[in-house]
Image 1 (cartoon, rainbow, N blue to C red):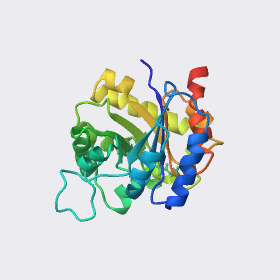
Image 2: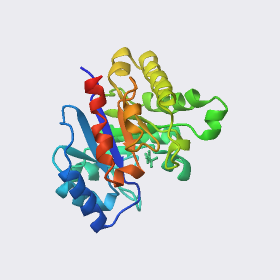
Image 3: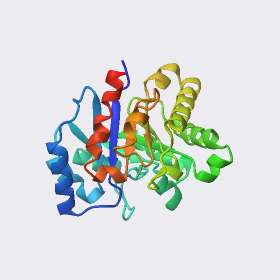
Image 4: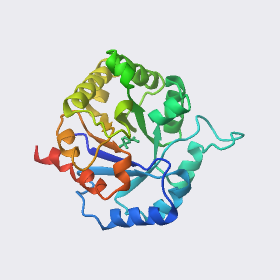
Length: 254
Ligand code: PEP
């Protein structure tokens, strides 16, 4: 079976109740390809998860932007995987570069989180990606392979993981990777999975691209053979997110 196109909308630390209602209304009114063609997952800040869950159209799903590395308890300020499951939130984003870099989350810590979240029944959008300095020094594949290896060492089943390749230099900067740059890393990541995890995992794991995706650049990126969708930050708060969801049809008409 083919890899179903996946579009995640990462709202990051943005929004008010009023804004959330407005965005969700825009999404509800939009005509988008069917669930057979595209899986859409919206990721609001923790505090808005219950509201979005109540209002969101039923063909879209929800992700948290993080969760604690183990069972909850005396961890002030954290939200556990168990709590997300209890709230009926099926997905969680882990290893976003903003957390890796600003909060010093290491490869091993991210991998621990991925393994624990999966063990609790959550599905995971696991993010990897290199900084500009790493790209310019030719270390892109070594960096994303090390990030993926840490996860692979802890995880046996990949069916509930979507791997998001998000070059740090492209996140929130307006500097999108070219389709060729994205395809090259996605191809290499898939090959890495094939060789190091297994042929089936390499062939079936969805590898999505994130970094300044917008309504204007999404189609060309979506047309790349190893780009299975997007993780979208800034543009997921705008009506053009609908155009990004619609770019999934590039795969069906290819
Ligand atoms: C992100 O936050 O994952 C992201 C890709 O952000 P942006 O689309 O704004 O670059």
